[in-house]
Image: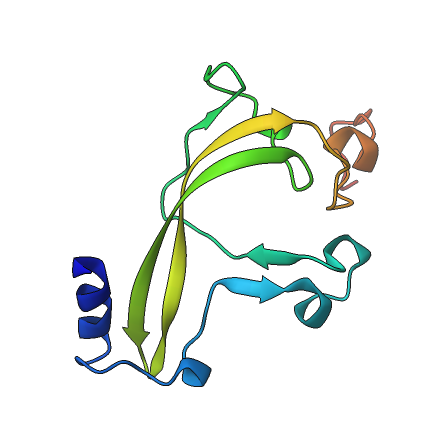
Length: 126
């Protein structure tokens, strides 16, 4: 209950109209034109610091390429109220990540090796 009161305090002590506040839970059918989101909800979460990332055995994953959009993971989240520049809502903070298993990549991102070949001439501007 204390957290609820603290959240309401962010909105000037009044509960805002539900239709007027922004929420981190998003409907993939409405907000994304991508088959990967169809029939699903998703949450936008962020952090100003990099999360700790661990594997199933809670050992650190040091190679960031092992964690990608599409892998299965557990995440720790924290929710908090915001009231900034006339925008009010509930935001979602990203804590830590535990990778559970690989999945199909959703990003379509290529590797540097796929994008570039080796430079054979030191003077590539000549």
